[in-house]
Image 1 (cartoon, rainbow, N blue to C red):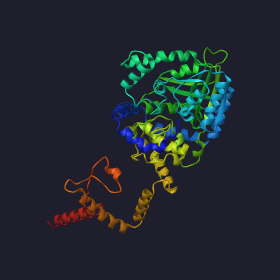
Image 2: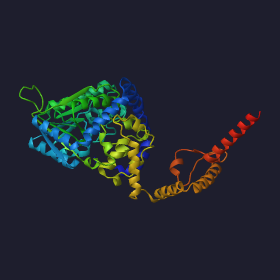
Image 3: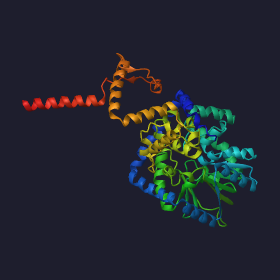
Image 4: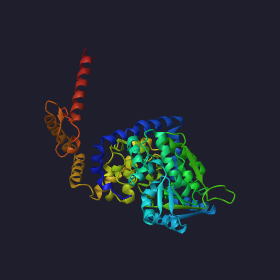
Length: 479
């Protein structure tokens, strides 16, 4: 997926004007937000989050050790473990595997890392058919290889009527409008691919160092078909996904489905440990795990390491007031929402995603719902600081911040300027007491009217209140 994060402002404006999208995005609050709120009542969320945070930190603090342990255990069970420094390298490794095994058709489960790799494009360029089997990803693929809008609900930006029209057009069948009928039609279209594919490609929600296993979590069961039916299975995932033990995985699974979809447990949970053995009745003949760096080691030991704890549940974007209004495509790369606003600059460079650290109200909702306690708003502030330090923000913005910093260090000048400012703003509000156009800050008034201040600063109001209270107390004592 090409990085287009530089166009966030323009894309956000387009999405805000799209009334159909605005209606479709209400599903986030009516479905995911409310479901999560109900699901976490069944557990001690704070205690479980603290435990998972500690377990994820343990893995990241000794990442090389646990990756080596995973490789040892996986190799001992017949898995070939490969490392890729970049997403492009990872795609090339998968292409080499396909070439080695004379693969003509690949079936895929939903994988955000494969989006980083642009895997479908790479496979198609070498003449290998690649078929997305997650329902949402399948819809996007037949709609011109549209990128996902959400990491767990990739087609959340579309409604049933749009999908019904797409199915009728692409499947050349009568238009269906009932969801069970539409899903059955999709199943009928996908089943022949499951039966004829040579290779299955999946992601990996977690890697278990203790057993050399790959953990997969889905709600549709397509991952079972992708890992059992083809003769070759390739799992691609980021190096940060390793967990030391099965107990760590159990803790993670108490929070991942609850945070993602509001379920106590996902419909399908697979723990894949090696290819088919001589006594096994199913499974692939060959299994590979491709571990992708793609900028992740650059965060190890630095001020953004905490972001590597992310388990890709999507809770931060479900609750984010910005994401809820613009959707995922506005962010311009694989990872949208608050998590993407930190990951994209970290992986592709802050100069390639100038607007993303600003794409937040810093309300802290993402912090409160994150199942691994990532202080996302703090990380966004750090990215903003880096942009200013590197002079990547517009000069007017930097000048305004410099002026603010100077005033903050000179209280008398600050008091004088604010006293003048509130009086000017009061006059600008007129009789309606509303400011419809604010010079040098039109972004605040282009879409809203700002209430005018009363003409006195907080300090003046506070002093007047205390004077009034003192007078009242003296009168009361005198009486």
